Structures are given as C-alpha cells and as structure tokens.
Image: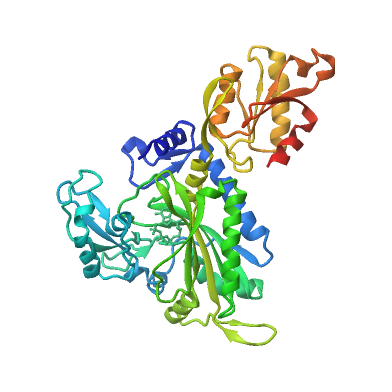
Length: 462
Ligand code: ATP
C-alpha cells in the first residue's frame, strides 16, 4: 500500500468510517464494516444515487429483490459454469494470485473467454515478470479456473448432495427476475428502467486495495429496457449521465476517465468503464454495458416464461434490449474519500481535511459552546443544537477539548460547518444577541450569522 492509501485507511478507522470486519477474531479477508461516520457517508451516497436514478427520472422504477434466488437463475445467467477467475498459488508461500490481474499489471490482456490452456500459455510466457506479492518468488502452480459464486445451504435440512443455493454473484439478476412483475404491475412504456441497490458476494481470490475488491459488496445497478437496435444514442446518453453524476459529487474531473473494453463477450454490443484514479492509479469504478437481449432471452429459455414486451399501442411484441450501469458502493466510497483527502496549512498549522461535498458529509454541522464550564453557554448551545437537528438530522454536538481541537476533528471527517455559541450570542454585545459564529471548513473563515438563518445557510450548501 502506498502512503496515501495508508493515510486513508488509517483515518477511516480512527474516525469511525470503516473498520476491518471481525477484527477481534483476527479479521476475515475481504470484509469491512462501516462505522458511525461511514454509514452516514454511505447512506448519503446511496441517496444521491437513488435521487439521480429514480426520483429525477420519470421512467425508472426502484426495486429491492430478495438475495436468495432459485438456483436456475445462476445457470441461466452463466454464473454456475462461467463465473470464474484464473487462480494460481505461489509454491513457496501458498499466496494466491489472480493471474488475469497480474498479467494486466504487466501490460498483457487475458480475455475472460480464454480456456485454462490459453491462460497458462500467456502466464508461462510472462512468468519472469510476475512475482509473488508476498515473498517475491516467481514459482507458481499452473492457473486453474476458480468459480466465484458463494454457496449456501438455505432450506437444505436433509441430504448432503442436494443442490446448493447461491448468494448473489451480482445484484442485477434480481432486476431480470422481476422485470415481468414490474411490467405487469406498473405498466411502463418502453424505454423504461429498473434501479436497485443490492448486496452481492464473490469468492474473490485476492481481495485487496481496501474497499476496492471485497468479498461482500453492495452494487448499484440500472437496467434500461429499450427497443431492439435502438441502443446507440441511449448508450451515449447514459455514459454521459453517469460521468456527470460523479462530477456532481464534487469528484475532480482529472481523476475520472472513460475506458472502452477491448474484448467483448459474444452478446455484448459495447462496454465501457468509468475509471477513477485511485491511490494506485486509474482503475474500474463503474461498468456501462450494452447487453442486447441476452439476459431476458436466457431467463426465457431456462424458465419457460414469455418475457417479451407487448407494445400497448402498436401491439408489436419483442424481447427488449438492455443497457446496464453497475457500480460497487464501496468503490464510490473509496473514490470519494481519496478525492476529498487533503493536507493543507491553516493558521500556520498543517491539518488533514476531507473536502467532501456538503451533501455527502456525514455531519453537516457541529454545534458547540465556546466554553464547556459555563452553564448559560451550554444551555443556549443545546437549544440551537436541538432545533437545528429537527430540521437537518446530520448535526453533531462536540464540547470536548478546546475549540481549535474540535475544529480539527471536524475537518478530518469533512464537516462543512462549525457553529459556536459564545457570550455575544447571549447578548453581551447587544446587537450580536442571537447570532453565532459559523466557520467554513475549507477556508477556516468565521462569520457572524443569526441563529434563525443557520438552517437556510446549511441547506443552501447541501
Ligand atoms: P473486476 O474485473 O474488477 O473483477 P468486474 O468487471 O467483474 O470487476 P462487474 O461484474 O462488471 O465487475 O461488476 C460491476 C461493478 O461492481 C464493478 O464495476 C465494480 O464497481 C463493482 N465490483 C465488482 N466486483 C467488486 C468487488 N469484489 N468489490 C467491490 N466492488 C466490486
């Protein structure tokens, strides 16, 4: 891990954003927990995503499908047979590597469709360039394909041989399975979309890079159902909309870029990623896929249920094509943290500050009395705090340590405003009665604002 990554991981833990999962038992690889600040940031991100993809669109419907699905689902989707990554093991220290990613790191593309033999031929040709990330040896077993689906035994009370059910390998299958229910209950007209944020699980061979590659994740997906062959224009529009959404979160434009896939699966018409410049370099943030009628056709074949769409006006019947956007919430979370992390100088001191967009900040404003041991200041501050919290829930109280320390702590978690109640608020200077100081996170500037205007000022920034 490089320096910036270490700082982000450490701040995330120290300030209650992200903890390693099951830490008291020594952890569990690829699993993380979101702490009190993290869950607020995560919820703010989900809300921003839902707002853009459901509320701001007239023709998009939200969904929350059950995680467990009939096992046929994963046969139809191709996951039972095809959802695998090439795994090799270091013969010296038993560390497992994902061969396609190691090849990618030395500039070689291993196509998902390649057989084990083909991957091993590439692997052999580049063996000297690929070192074990743990011990540095170049001594690996041959690559074999390892299925990523996570099995469970839901409802299996009797036999050991009975068929497993799977945790979702990708959340979007829930959308395909409920496509017909949405059509029959909501009567949408094509083009229309279904949006969902759902959990997915993958037996990732080498979970790494903090929240970037985890074994349990949350995916935010949209599937736009369109008429056959009407994909081109809509696809370009979606790509732009998704890029604009990241910009609306305040992410620096120079840290985002598009990348087209070189190798397409047989049914795909086109595929692009939005990449973010993580601490280790540009890497996939979101996938945008032009999937033709593959998904619905597969589920028609395996379920025997007609999933074609009948145009209510023309009576025309067809299987819709699908344009998909899919992103892991953890990857957005990490991109946003990386982008916001800054160290600067304020009042002659270096400070760490998360320059989060106010709408994403876990705390919108911190309220505190100038001095903790003056009951009249505390009472007034409590009154301001309680009133503000009713209007804007993500408000914090802090009366620990001196005021400078409180500001620094809030800077570190990205709180855009700090509100301080002092003797002027109580009327010591008559014309300042019922005003407070409002401090801006990015500039450190303070101004005098009437208590009655606080809520409006904070809302404007959100
Ligand atoms: P990769 O090649 O990195 O394994 P992928 O191309 O298989 O990923 P998709 O199956 O297209 O990924 O998943 C859609 C999105 O879900 C990705 O763009 C990413 O944001 C997110 N995602 C996929 N795998 C993980 C993971 N292990 N941890 C966190 N997010 C993930």
